[in-house]
Length: 226
Image (cartoon, rainbow, N blue to C red; front, top):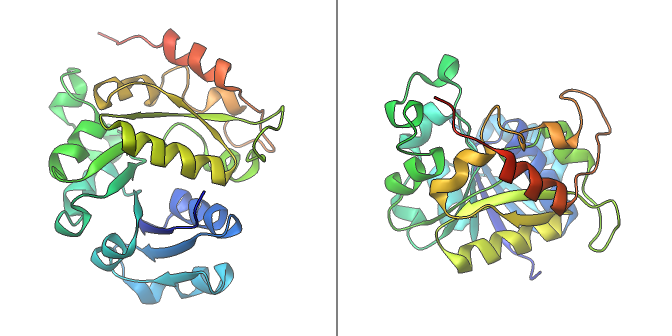
């Protein structure tokens, strides 16, 4: 793909791993977190000249694609104005013990991706990178065409945004499987068949490659509880 600038709102485990993969693929990254750019000095030094730290609003403004990877409870703190018109990758998962209880997620009337999309009405939100353990994300990337390439599910309401995310994931070493609109991203959430398990046991490296067909089958096997 054309080398692009990726903004990261959140630079924890997922954010820092995405940043490493992106820099290795030739992209520029602008990192941010809730504690301020100075706390990212070591990570930026590790990543090298293609990375810099900024505030969340600056990362949102700078990114051609922006990855939101903050705890779900903090999604309302994501700056909306600088994300207008942009493709936003949402990695959030719902953990009630950490995030508090969200009624629409408990009763199935909404999904995490839809929550962020409602908060960012002028952005184009795509759910991605939320179903794989960070260690496997860092270890399983393969060049395009590799027989042991893994796939990641994506969900979104905008076809062009999903195409952009598919292109980015390809550059990071993964195929993409379209899981449908944001309303279907419940199929990729915690405790579903596609969550963590296809890539091998949580916490164990190097992980197990999971093909696009494996991911399609896992998505189809998902069922709503209750």
